[in-house]
Length: 465
Image 1 (tube, rainbow, N blue to C red):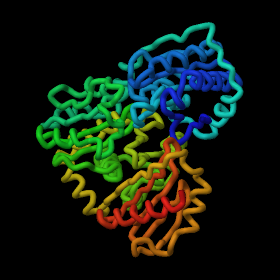
Image 2 (spheres, one colour):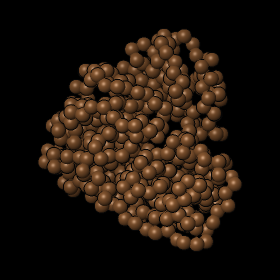
Image 3 (cartoon, rainbow, N blue to C red):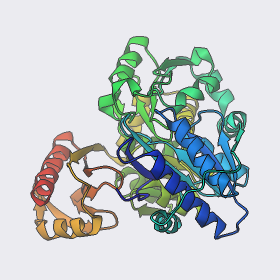
Image 4 (spheres, rainbow, N blue to C red):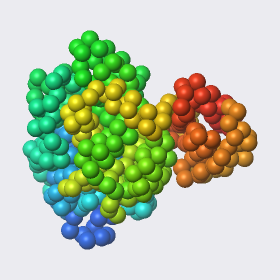
C-alpha cells in the first residue's frame, strides 16, 4: 500500500496497512524533509487512545530523535487541536498526531500539523511522500522527551469562551458524549459537574463496538439520555475530538448543515463579529444565504479542513465549516484549526446568551433563511476509491438535464461533482480521500426531495464503479 496524506492524513488498518515499519518510513521521510530545510527542527508528537497509538508515537519519536531532531511527545492524551496549538505556542517545526480520527477501531493513522497550528497542505505533504519510498530509518541515538500541555490547552479554550455566562445562565445540564475518545480526557474538567451529564467518557480502544464518528446512527444513547434526563442539549465529539455533533432538547439530531449556521448566527448577532465566511463543497446553503444577508464575503472550498485552514491563515475569516462537523473560528488568539471542544463550548455560550432552547433557535433561524434537510450516504466499495478527476469526468458525461424533476442550473467540479438545482438545492458526489468510499450528499427543503436526489446519485455511481 502506497502512503498518501489524503483529505486529512494517512490512515490504514493496523497490522495490514498501518504497521511499525511503515511508521518508521514516514518518520524518516519527515526527518529528511525537515533537515533539508532549516536543519534545526523541533517536532511535537501526540496520540489518541487506540490500540498501540502510544507505541506508534514512541516509534515515530525514536526515528526523529535518532536523526538529530528535537523530539517531544505529549504525555497526556488530548484532542488533536491541542497538539496543533502546542506546535504554534511552542514554536515547533511540525506536529505529528497518531490517530485515525473517526475511523473504525482497527484503523490508525497520522495527521501532520504546521507551525501555524493547522493541517499541512498537499504542497507541504507531497515532498514527504516522495521521500518515503527511498527512506532508510535510523533508530539508534537520542530518545524523545515528554512534555505536558493540558493546562495551557484548557487556558486557551476558556480564554475564547465566556465561561462565566455559561455557568451562570445554563439552568439545566448538558449531555456530553465523548464516544470513548480524546474528549473524555479534557471536557469533564472544563464544565462544572452540575452542568454536565457524561456519556462514554472512559477510554475504550474498541469504542464500544462502533466507529467514533458523531453521526446520527451512532448517537442513539445520547438522544435517549437527553430526553430521559431533560438535558438542555446533547454534544458529541469524534475519536480525536476535532468534530462536533449536536442533539436538541427534544432528542433530535441536528445536521452539521444546521449547527454551522446556528454557531455563525451567534458570532454575528451575539458577539457582533464580522469576516469572511467559508464552506466546504459538502456544506449546506444556509451559510451562503447568511453571508448575503449580512453583506459578508463567502467562499466555497474543497472538502478537507486544510483548505479552510489555508484561508484562515490569510486572515479576516469569521468562520469556516464542513459537513463532517468540523468548525474553525477566526476568534482573536485562536489558530487555523477545527476543534470539537471549542465548538461545543461556543454552542453552550449560544444557549446561555440567547436563553433559548436549541429547537427555538433553529426555528427562528429557518424561518429567516429557509429550511434545510441534508443527508449524506456513503457507497462502500471493496477496492480503493477511484481517482477523483477521472471519476468526476465520467460522472459529468452521464448527467441528465433534470434530476428528480429539477432542472440542472450549474455544475461545479471543485471537489467531485456538485450539481446545483433550482432554489439552491444541490447534490454532490465525490470519491473519498481516506477510505474505500464514494460519498454522496444532498440538501433540499424537504426530506423526501433529499432522499430522491441521493437515490439518483447512488444509482449513477454504482453504474460507473
